[in-house]
Length: 305
Image 1 (cartoon, helix red, strand yellow):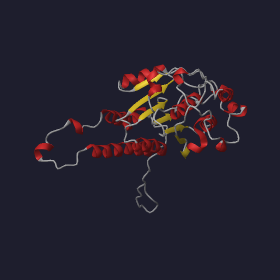
Image 2 (cartoon, rainbow, N blue to C red):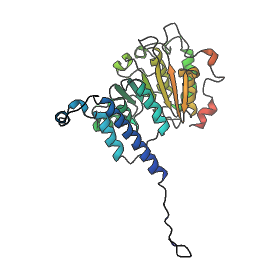
Image 3 (cartoon, helix red, strand yellow):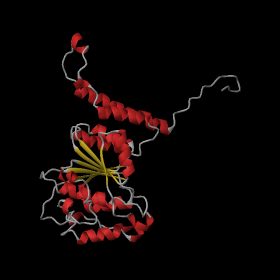
Image 4 (cartoon, rainbow, N blue to C red):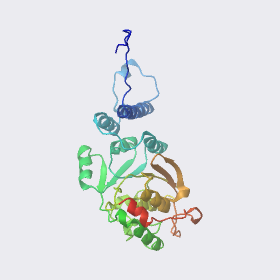
């Protein structure tokens, strides 16, 4: 560009937000991979002869290499923010990337969760049978199961009232849901899922944006029961609820995960730490900490139909 006096100006245009977001996310994955590689590399002097020999132990773990490839060629942006991703990564890091990790919802982050927990066991639950098969076709090592949800967002207030009536019977906070008939619990998952002591549970599904969608009542309730019913006593479970800014997710989390267990909220991700219970307990939360309204009102339901 030339000014009136003939002087040339060079104008630099900053990158768009989308480009910046992608570069930041790629940097996050690359930094994690580099740090992980250093942690896996033996701390000893390498001679010229040994450096020429490639050992299988120093290979990049397959879940991580696949995740790097996936996010490098993908045109989609992650729907979680960088701060939300960092919270989940920090929790998994506290378990040395070797936790029992249960995720409700197959999302754009699926490969990332599997990669970050590469030394542990990661299982995905989703309502879309086609999507489950699609992910399994892409990566045969992904363990995912489809489930038929029987709840709807429009029924949430009614179902939560039913749950309160059944706290001492079918909807107890401490039980094996495999043998339960609780309407708000997931009782038809593969049998082995009920036997695992879950360290981390992420709730990012099913769909809950309209009245006819399943909503996350069952997933949040089930996570609360799983955390309290672990065979290992005095061990806590990290439960992370995405989109906790929505009324349903916030109210259900308050009811079944409890406000006193909420340790942080980052953007739209709620982080709860829930301890084990016992068979004599029939309340999910300490009544001293219950909010003034612990169930969804009709007006809240109508707002999200």
